[in-house]
Structures are given as C-alpha cells and as structure tokens.
Length: 289
Image (cartoon, rainbow, N blue to C red; front, side, top):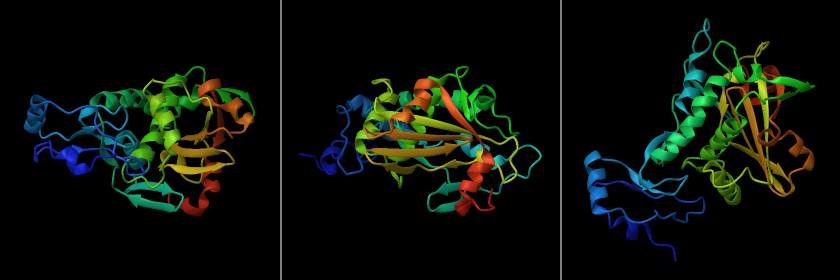
C-alpha cells in the first residue's frame, strides 16, 4: 500500500519544505528513514529544502541542481570571440526551436550526488566545442576509417558517464516532456551510481560535430532536450550538447552491428561536419543559429 503524501509530511514541521520524488506513474519514492529531531532543527535554521535524492535515494538536504550545467548555458549564449553574442538561449525540441532565458533547475540531488555529476562536468565541458571553434575532444581523436575516430587519448569512462547523466537528468526532472522507460532509467541510474557496469543491452553512440568549416551557423553551440525514438525491441534516447550528439540505445532488440561502435566499450566516435547536422534539422532550426 502506498502511503498518502499527507501521512508522510505530517511528521515534519510546516516551515520545513519536504520534497518527495515521484516516479512517472505517480508512485511515491519514500525517503530512506525519518530524519531525527536534531537534523530537522538544523535544516529549519538554514531553511533548506529536504527530501529524497532522485539519484541515490538518500534523505536529506537537496541542492537546486541545474538539469543542464550553467556552463552549457554560458557557452550557448555568449557566442565566439568577435561575434555578436546571442540575445537569448536557443532551445531545440522535436516540436521546434525557441529562444529562452530560462535555465532548468530543480531540487533534485543531494550534495554527494551533485558533486559526483559535477566532477564529470568539470572534465567534459572544457573538451566540448568552445566559443572559438576549438574542439579539444575532437582534436584528440585519431581517424580510424572514414568517419570513425578513436578516442583512447580521452577519459572515455568519464565522458560516457557525463553523457548518460545528461540523458538521465533530462528524463527525470519534473517538467520533462520525454522520459526513459522505467527499466532503462533504473539501469542508467545504477550505472551512474557505480552500482552496475555499463548496461549489457545498451549502446552509446557518439558523433562529434566538427564546426571548423561551418557556414550554416554554430549548431555545435546548442544543446537539446531529450529526444526519444526506437525500433523493434529497443528504445533510443538522444541528446546533443555542445558538439556531441549522444544516442543511447537500450533493449534486447538493439541491432548487433551497433555494438561495434559503442563509445563506452570501443572508445570510437563518428565525426561529421556540423553543417550536415544543420541541414538534417533545418526544418526546425531554420536560420536562427
């Protein structure tokens, strides 16, 4: 039997805000234990928001987390040196593109999990596409054949966890319009916590968008919401962030040939001109980048 919300919060003084995370189906994820009187008094004195961390489930103070790091917002809004900065940010979804000044934030994670994801971000953002078209991740790759390149010089484990953390966060925050299947979200969550290896029935495909010869706008400066597709027996979750097009395929039906280019296993990426991406999505990007 699932407790009513008021049965849980009635034990907590009114001037402490309690956030209890919910699954997409509305089932409550109850905190792990009840906070002590001393803990509550400490939280009240600091006016902290408390609740269950959406990643590890621990109950305690929650951080107001950026769903996508503020570093990505700065990169998208500032523009490269010598170029007039954008008046606002650009948000791309399957439904279209719009300018926005809103940054997605939510009381989502405990301090420990916020730091865990932050460590991956501190490695990833300096190697993603920069304002001046420098792309350190791309520069460190060695061409193998055609569009395939080897990224052994990079910390692939950190980059894979960073990309999956973006997929996960964009799928679990309250205002998310697209979510992972519950089983896929659980596999992703446990991987991010270090409780499980990279899911056996999953492929992370990464394509780097090379902006060096772009003439159709700097699509490598954009980041997208979570997109979802799939096929017979598998789901596809896609995020594009600052020049990295990450596609996470999950399920027993993932085609076997996809595994040969799984970034998390083989350290391979594809490289394509950023203008190809711009043409591919010209229907909703148009001339706004």
